[in-house]
Amino acid sequence: MTILRVTQASVILALVIVTALAFDFTNGFHDTANAMATTIATGALKPKTAVALSGVLNLVGAFLSVQVALTVTNAVVKIQNSDGTPKESLTANGGEAMLLIILAGLAGGIVWNLLTWLLGLPSSSSHALFGGLIGATVAGLGWAGVKWNGDGTKLDGVVGKVLLPAVVSPVIAGLVAVVGTWVIFKITVGIAARYAQRGFKWGQIGSASLVSLAHGTNDAQKTMGVITLALLASGHWTSTSSIPFWVKVACAVAIALGTYLGGWRIIRTLGKGLVDIAPAQGMAAQSASAAVILASSHLGFALSTTHVATGSVLGSGVGRPGAEVRWRVAGRMVSAWLITLPAAGLVGALLWYAGDTIGGLAGAIVVFALLVVAAAGMWLRSRRVRVDQHNVNDDWDAVVAPAEVAAPVTVAS
Amino acid sequence: MNNLGFALDGAWRVLLAGIALGAGLPILFTLGLRSLAWSASGPVPRPAGRVAGYTLFAIVVLGVLLGITFIVATGFGKALSFEHIYPTIVPKH
Image (cartoon, rainbow over all chains, first blue to last red; front, top):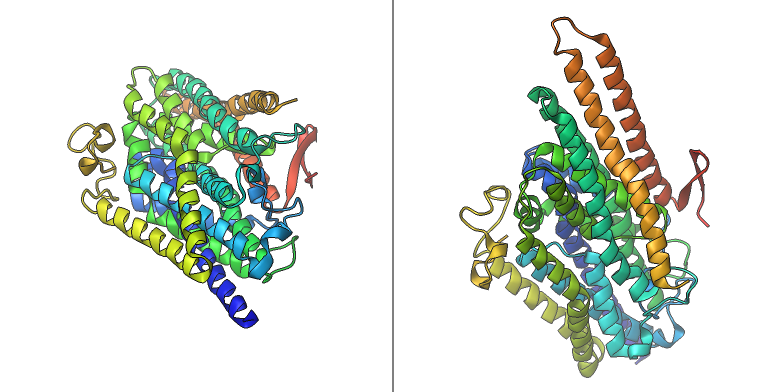
């Protein structure tokens, strides 16, 4: 019986690891746009070159994460102790209780990431992950399992780590981009085209590269932390000061491959949908993103890359004289941000109930199977109106302006 | 202090740093381009424009290197400290 239990837990653990890497992969292609949408839209880099560069830098960034915080879930839920070890109440039977919460939470995050990708909406992958984990935790441990506010000593909890930064970050990035774009357009009036073109091309590549590198160090870490937590819960790992090397390699490769795949639908919305981007504007937007992401992370006020990048692109549209901002597209994005946390949470909670009702290994397999079905369904739907490196830069209003159209059949980018 | 207080406190600093680096550096870069263009636009080359242009580019490159240093330091569990004005790498507290 004991041996059977152990084997069961190992299979569940394997499902959790595969799901975590799948989440990391969606995290990659969901966020390619944050670094590269403007660079692709202005033609500074060819679409494939841009995603390849971003993928490599994400890979390098992920390997730079030498010190990985194992306490990633502590910001929003109470399933770990402060040193990163899992709560003892969840580690019985090879950690089945913990593994089911993580599995359902990750699956909730993936489903929401895929749905927003299908609709071409940039939404925060960290919010999707946190939302899924919160939902699964509420289902598994009740509302008391969620850390809504911190203890008042630092920015913490769902409010402090997720909600407030989400409101504040697009505004900050937007303001920085408005200032940068406005001044740069004043300076460049009358500058010889050959200087402007070459200069802004390199300015964009440099700033987009910084964003990619920072993304790799930040985001791959989260999945590394989650997988290591699963290993700790099931007793396959004991150290809280290091993570297994294979976890690091697997996460780094997953996020880099995801980035290289390129979430073309999201790149199109961010690069073409919000505003039409001129090279100088692209550089201003991307520099604003890089500076705000790095400064906030330095000051311990971690912001979502997606919200920052979107705010920067919008700001660069406001700051450039004569540019038209499509506020309807922006409105759709903001609505997506608002429902990301509850929507991913709902999926996470439902999947947890499904897994718990069936129970044990069969429950985990059902959760995984439901995830695969949902993912396959959305992928098939995406084939109806394809967006790839060949049509990513097509005029927004001309043929397909999908994010403007409400009917889901024509939703494409 | 509550979460809102911490957030607003952090937001101000991020905004200031963001404007200084995120708007300031690309503006310097553009001024550099402008200087280069100016140095080549007259009937005779104006070396002062080239010098000014490349000086501005050098400042921007330093800013980018600061960014890379920060990313790498963070990955190694370190932080950047500006207590000596110039950045130094310190253990994260």
